[in-house]
Image (cartoon, rainbow, N blue to C red; front, side):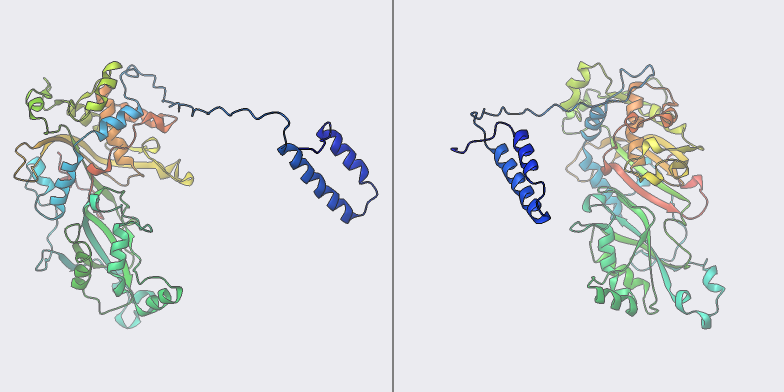
Length: 467
């Protein structure tokens, strides 16, 4: 570094600017460029020795918790504690049970000792799949067969699917992921009409059908009667061909329950009047039989209730809960009372939703009407002969006109958290007025959630499994 540097950068810039007065524009541009280069050179050179930079330690993340003002605020779990408590469970047993239900080996009714047939009388094919034409096709009946052209000539098919949530990455089609929608659209792509097929080929798109659905399920969520539909202008499509195409795509994981020809006005989402969900929450882990026999589940004095302790499922977090003197025990009857307060009310469930669009984050789009909300104790049947001990579990049943994103899972986790904290029976209703979503618990694991059915007629309490 033999060059002599100016005394200060400001003196250099001042002298440079003074010397460019009266020069043409081109010269000014060259001089400006030279000034910038000289400034970079001066900043890069340093006559003082460089000091070793100290390693910057990452700051510890501070978690902001919602400030509850009730009497149970000190005994209520934090979001992290709730997450750990919910996920430290034998969820593989629930997934195995749902797999047996999807394949017809078991049924949800068997959990509660019910022998109720929830389905209407149907015409079944040789493989037990319902294939009928919907008698209510009033829109197309009003148009004579000679006048059926254009939009009137298209045929809409209603497909009811059953699939195992643990085998797919959710419903919605996404690049590079094994989703139910992507699999179904590829399977029935050969049934699209010639005009649509030609348009897809011109754009370089694969031959796939466009499927609408009653409700998108997350990764891990099982469905027993998911409703979807697609339409085509082809008249030679047979119902059995649709069934075979979908059933062959993923055996033992995805199957068709029914295929029906419906009116052009039918839409699986907008035409639905209620959705029926079921959540199974395992209570113990049968890996340690000695602890289970010692009474980790103690029957309380209250009729029909049971105190639940997760001594095995939450070993990793038990010390943290004990240090803060928070309960890891709850009564199923308490959860039932908390949920029962939601029945028959039109409420805004904004605090119990996640990932909502800004345009649907307030007002009527967040309002839901819950017809049925109950909890009960069940026993998950053993999935194999090797398992001698069945798993105790709590099931939660919810029926509403609609559900927001992740609303069922947040409701389940929050109800369990409030029951363990000993909150009042109307605690869930009071949380509707909270100012932040941190007031509710993180979503429960998706493995326990199951979409039982979607209804297109008025709600009938007889469809419920828990009275």
